[in-house]
Length: 85
Image (tube, rainbow, N blue to C red; front, side, top):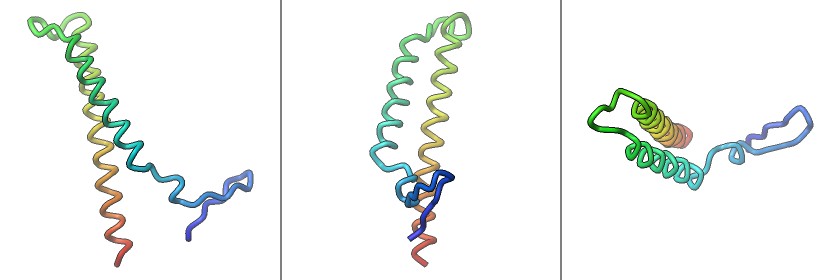
């Protein structure tokens, strides 16, 4: 088993440091909630002025967060397959 020893002498397993599925789901749901909230702030008749541009930036940031979380999930699946061999 792989261990990580910190400067203060604490010993953690690598499994402790890996994000679990519950946290991933919570983060994705929060990002989706932020997207839903920001969509309500967008003025669709004039989307590039005022608070609408801030809402669009928030939507894009939330989408980036979801993509990064899904990439993390895929990389863990690939790592698990490589470790099997």
